[in-house]
Length: 269
Image (tube, rainbow, N blue to C red; front, side, top):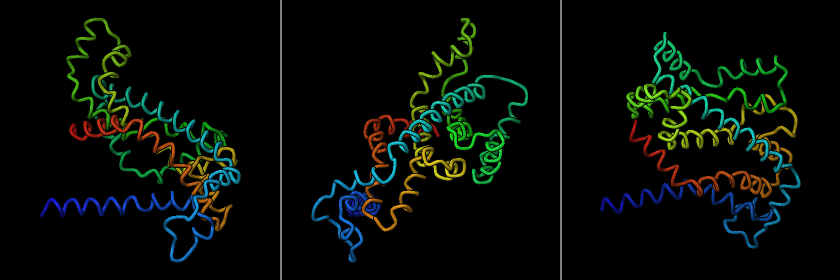
């Protein structure tokens, strides 16, 4: 009986979670009358695939896609590099004020992004970087959270590996490249994926530092599209569906690596 109740509960939660997503897809294939009808239409009478092409005509979503992929990709690559280097230093190197530095990092974790966002904005503005890719990229090339995430993951690698490598004449960067990087691929993949998704969904920072339509990220472009199209709910649903396609493709292609990386990290914690 308990097993049946568990299945019912899981199924109910799955339906509640998936319904908004499924309805968004169905509404993107409806006519305006069907999308705005009361009571709401669930299944469209005729699938309106031209809604997607109409949405692409109203706003330059291809440009938004390029901006988002370009910025998120560089941010992810930069975050992986800085995270790996910082985690290596905190795990394997001894230097003065190491504990003080770690305490400062922990303190930074307690500060919400919204607290420092205007300080970052003022810095970017003073350097004259508004409406540039640099404004979207530079503040997110490192993450204290991911540094600690990887640091804890790397505690499973014995320090004797590093000492043995130094005895054999291996430099720090060579040790990172040949030993540390291969042994932490799953954690780095998880970091890269989470960082890319975070960049894909970013809204507040891009809307602050960009005013030019050609510099919009996908979330800002979608928000502006909803304002520009007014009551065209079917086109808004089509545009929303378009924006989630890359994330879905990313998940289905790398789902095994995602599950493996998260499960191993969870077991480590």
